[in-house]
Length: 245
Image (cartoon, rainbow, N blue to C red; front, side):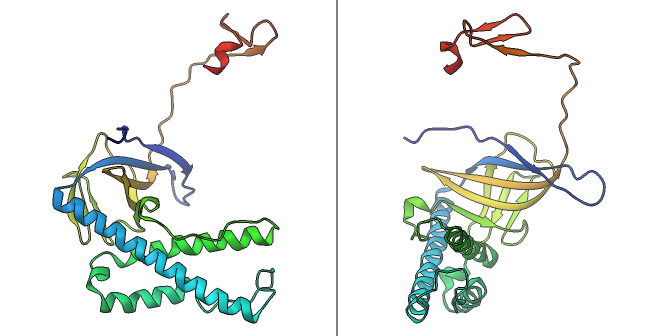
């Protein structure tokens, strides 16, 4: 059985808003409790997004091989632009959604976010090449290496319902969430991640209230020595071996 870990929330960078107290940007992680039918639908959603990622990568590879043959200096800083990019692949995605029901079943903007994920990989690849590094070319994703689907906007293909502790996901339905704490701030981005046989919901929120600690009005100090690794101003001595425990 996979290791069971308690979902947690992680503070990241502050949101530098223009009006009032910008608050914090905070990420909340909860365990999803899908039905057996929803569990299958979540896996199908992940497979569709992985197939979109791999197909888009193959299209870029084919286009780059043609351009490189025509321009030997393609990998220089002045490389010619490829006819395949994020915008062109989004247009192709629109056509595919009109033709294939299994693709149109899930949110359009979440699928565009998957294309953006690939685009960022290529941007990082060429940026590192320009710096003289030797990065690995973006790789195809096997089933065990693609575990996350992201909806860039709450309410667009995914909608958080705090009053009922459920998340609505297009093509999947209302999935129950094991909410162990209140979500504070404005939910901006929704992600679903597979962890072993479990599914987790990640909510990225802007303008979450700051949680300031009460001042202790105390000052502490440490002193590194030879006989003892550290001596504190409280009179505690930490031995060298204990520093690695």
